[in-house]
Image (cartoon, rainbow, N blue to C red; front, side, top):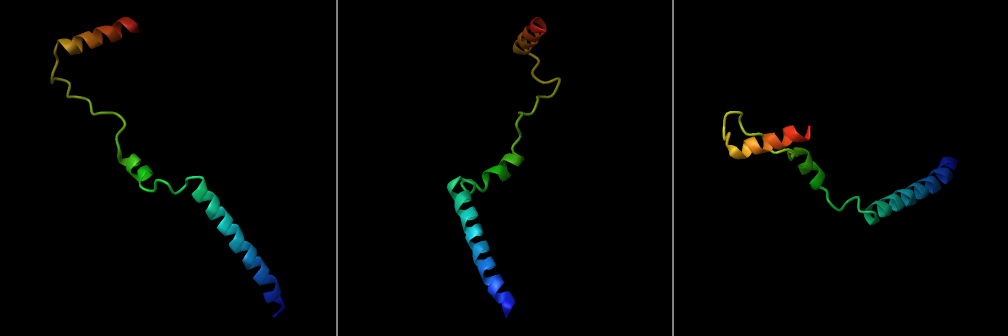
Amino acid sequence: MESVYLLIPVSVLLVFGIAIAFWWSVRSGQFDDLEGPGFRVLMDDNPPKPPAGAGAGAADVDVDADKAGKV
């Protein structure tokens, strides 16, 4: 019975601590976008490169010449 006198105040303090942590996380925007980070993992940052033999036109030559001059 004596342990109940200790456990009840400790549990009340724990509940208040959890409530304060939850309130802080909601106010700071931790729960604003729950799905965005999951989709961002799946998105590709770089567009796919065209195959090597496809579309070798004048525009590709100009880009290569610009790159060669800047190196």
